[in-house]
Amino acid sequence: THPLPRPDRRRIMTVANQKGGVGKTTSTVNLAAALAVQGLKVLVVDLDPQGNASTALGVNHNSGVPSVYELLLGRVGVAEVAATSTQSERLACVPATIDLAGAEVELVTMVAREARLRQALNPEVLDELDYDYVLIDCPPSLGLLTVNALVAAHEVVIPIQCEYYALEGLGQLLKNIELVQAHLNPNLGISTVLLTMYDGRTKLAEQVTEEVRGYFGDRALRTVIPRSVKISEAPGYGQTILSYDPGSRGSMSYLDAAREIAERGTERETA
Ligand code: ADP
Ligand code: MG
Image 1 (cartoon, protein in one colour):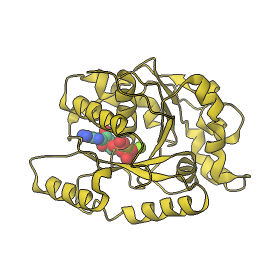
Image 2 (image 1 turned 135 degrees about the horizontal axis):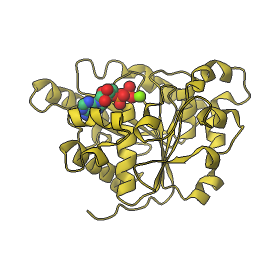
Image 3 (image 1 turned 90 degrees about the horizontal axis):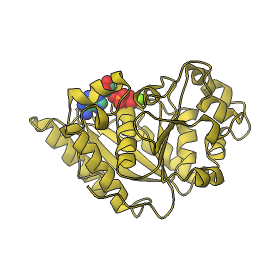
C-alpha cells in the first residue's frame, strides 16, 4: 500500500444516521484507523454518551475523565481532551463519558447551543495538532448533539445497513441536514454513503445496494463493508479490525473505503 494523499484542507466529517446499530461507530473508528495507518493524522470526536468509539480506540472514558462534555461546555480545549489511541500514534480521540448523557438537555439553555462543537474545534488548534481528518461519531438520535456535529462539519458520512427498509428512516436525517444547511452551516454536504454489514450471499444486499446507489449516485462508495464477526469482536479488545485481524476481509474493506474517501477528495462535498 502507498500512503494516502493529504487533503488540501482539513476534512471534518460527521458520521450520522439516527438509526441505532447501522454501523456508525464501527465505521467511524475503523475508517479513522484506516486513514491513520495509511499515513494521515486523524482525530475522532466521540459524541455518543455510550462512549463506544472511545472503547474501540482504547481511550479511557470513565466518568470524570476530561471529555467531549467539558469541551462542549467550553471548560477545556481540544488539545487537553484528545487522547492518543492505542491503535496508532497518528490517531487520537476525544472521549465521551456518561456525563454527556445530560448534555442534550443542558445545551438547550446555552448560548449558541448548536455551535458549541464548532467553536470548540478551533481551527488554529487543529492546525497546530496537524490533523488531516476529524471524524465525529454521532448518537442514534437527531437531537442537539447531532445538530452540533452537523454544524461543526464540512461533510456528512451516512452508513447504511444492508437490510429491509434501509432508506426508509433516512428522510428525517436528510431533512435535518437541509435545515442545518439552510440556517446554520451552508457548507455542509453529504459526501459519502457507506454500505455496511453487506452479505453478498443474499439477494437483499444486492437490492439495497441498487436502491442506495440509485438514490445517492456516486456518493455511495464502491467499497462495501462485509458482515463479519471479527469486525464486531474487535472493540471488545479495545481494538479496531485493522489491528485485531489485519489481513481479514473486514480490515481490507475499511482500508479500501478510506482510500476511496481520501483519493476522491472533497469534490462531491456539495453534490
Ligand atoms: P451504531 O453506532 O450505528 O449504533 P455500531 O457501529 O455500534 O452501530 O454497530 C452495531 C452493532 O453491529 C455492533 O454490535 C457492531 O459490532 C456490529 N457491527 C457493525 N458493523 C458490523 C459488520 N460489518 N459486521 C458484523 N457486525 C457489525
Ligand atoms: Mg454508535
